[in-house]
Length: 273
Image (cartoon, rainbow, N blue to C red; front, side, top):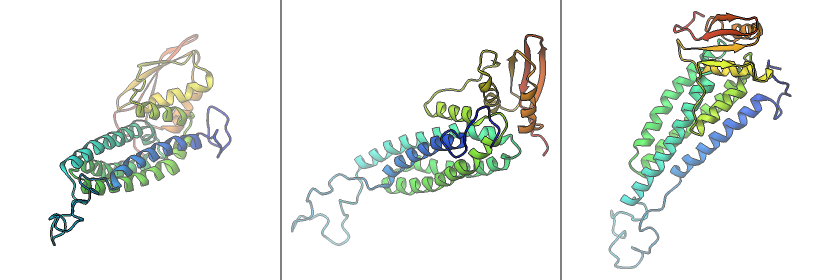
């Protein structure tokens, strides 16, 4: 059983990995449904109106004449542009939410750093396909781009759900649940807490370490925040050393007896590994 601030039974709905996986799976299924609307044939103006069926109609019967049922009109091209713009926006929102929460937390842990590097390489390819989808000017181009996006997204889903989430759950501090909460916040269009000071004294004890680790995950290189506590958080310090050796700073600003303040930061350089 992985270290956590709460008690759970593995492989049940109380398991953080299972709960996080359900959230990730739901989002990918939503994106899949949106992409499917671009891949499925769209009705075009004039299709099925009976034109060209009768003798002497003069349209669609002569060899080499265009088939009106399969030729996109300017109106259908406009619909395609509107649809792709909405889908592209949702995909980019998802990618940003993942990068700023789940990927950011794993990128600075020795156990998962290479995994995130691989995900970022795949993300570069995915961005190119999403850009192509955004630029698609007709249904055929949109369909081809949507199929490529869906193929790469399927790989992302498998890696995140089967490899990344368990890796995050194994990190000290029970960081996975608050990271998933942050992910959902960004999906809804919200913003994350980037307060310079985190006072955990009024926070329930079991929520303190996950809160601090989640705030650390949001730091950019060179960034810091100040932790305020009512005791010396030595157990938290040990967890930081286990999860992020050489990749964090820990400087006491005030040493009790009733109030303790520690400045926690992310170095601007990559530690040697």
